[in-house]
Length: 300
Image (tube, rainbow, N blue to C red; front, side):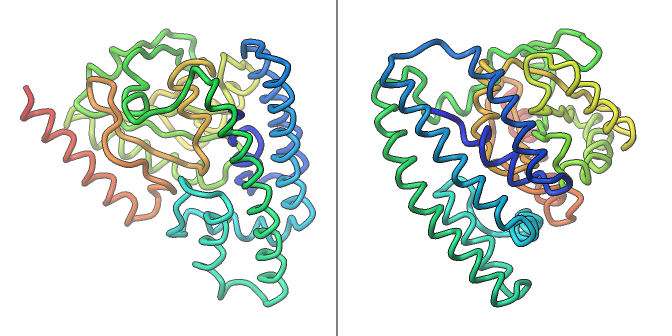
């Protein structure tokens, strides 16, 4: 199954960049990932090509009405919509939650685009269901919860990291972000504060920038520059896109996303969407962190 991150999520959440730049940049990332994928059957290849085309049709809608969609995407981290469900429903929920912020013409454009996207999503779902029957990498909840149990990567200085990163902490806060994501960058300094706050509690914050996958040196340099500008000291990692953690990251539909991982490499609780520079998000995350630490103490 083609991951939607490659064609939609990064494209739609590059609020600070032009849509054209985001589309071109992510196309390069997609090509890189595709070269690492084992060749499938001719039928599978045609299916993947059709999926690519459908995703690009959605992207074109965003590009055609860039101003109003950028406005909507800027509100996503404030929306109560569920990004884990149907993508059209997710977009509709965002628009509905913020409908007073749009003009009548803007709402008309958004809702018409969403209905077109809904039809495209139906075609995507049909193709993905066909692929699933022959896909050896089917997702299940047990895999999703243990994607870090056999972990490896490198920090931005080239130092190797393995799953001892998690086993050494009562809780590890893993933040997924990318350099062109404005809400992601906005929360970096707060994540750094969080890292300092939970060190004495047996916790640590770790960043995974999805553009730095597979040791992409240019992306690492860009990400490191952003981190330095925000005074960030906690570790950020580059991981293999074909690893379990890389595949998990590729399924993320909204950025920033933050998860908690216990010392066994298991994801605990639900992902947090949106930046923790929002006080409600920060308080909720701290409550979850304390819960994982308490459980760790009890299990010792």
